Image (cartoon, rainbow, N blue to C red; front, top):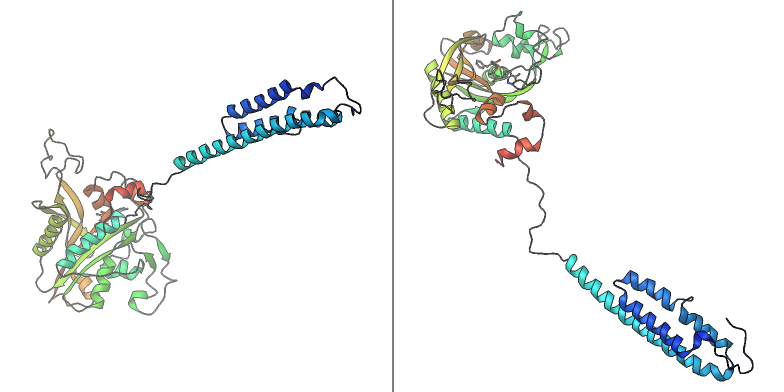
Length: 381
Ligand code: FA5
């Protein structure tokens, strides 16, 4: 600031000349008008109204003027500062209104749009297929029966007529939970002779069902079973079986075949036949492998190179599972008179059934829990 001007000094302070004040005011107004946003306006505000702005510095020069000149210079600077502040407030209001209008558009919420829904889950296709099979048999009058997955060796092997040296009892095939000596003693089913295993098939449920009921017995037994198989495209160490058991007077292989044909028709549609191939199971006699006609090529691919079929590898047939007439020794072990009653049994793997019913190429997809596998099967209640 200039030194106090006690006596009148005809030399005017440069910053207070009318044209200088007008220039400062006009520059401020132009800067405010040019500010494209609130940040730019703030910068212009600091530059033109802040303590070091030209008009503020000019204002300070007023004190250095002689008294006679103070009023006029004060009025000039005051009017310029008033105009600048008014223009600043107007531009501020204008830019705030623009910002509010923009935010309203950008952040608008369309309340008519559907809200984000949680993706619907789906039940595993093994579960739904298993229940579909149960339904087929329940509709025929069968009862659903279940047994423990941790099973005594007696139920899993002995009662089913597996000899003491049968290879299926070996540690390489069966998961043992307790060896023979460690298992409970007492009943035949839990004697010191019987170890404890993770059941290797659902057939022990046959024996439990026969011991729990008086004949006639009609049960369908779904459940998880365990074998020391490596996980690969066609095997898993934990898989699902469904077992069918019918005990009544006068049952024959014809009843078995008719029952399975009904199941095949219910699951795959009309017109497919089944066939039996001789096989051996200790708990059925006679025993057979049961095949169904391939539901894709309907048997036409067999011996016909012009019509290859991936589903049945051009065999024309698909293996469903093992079956047979219940061995009289098993009936006796379960306290049923084989002179009066006969029965049939059938057991098959659900993973393999799911593979060819839905063209699943790799069994590992069924156990990995990836929703991309289960989602295409849809929501089946
Ligand atoms: C049995 O388990 C007999 N209990 C079936 C039976 C019941 C025969 C009643 C007679 C009367 P098998 O070991 O073949 O049979 O197994 C039956 C089915 O289980 C096979 O056809 C196959 O579909 C399935 N399976 C066997 N091992 C595996 C595995 N590691 N992974 C997935 N599925 C398997």
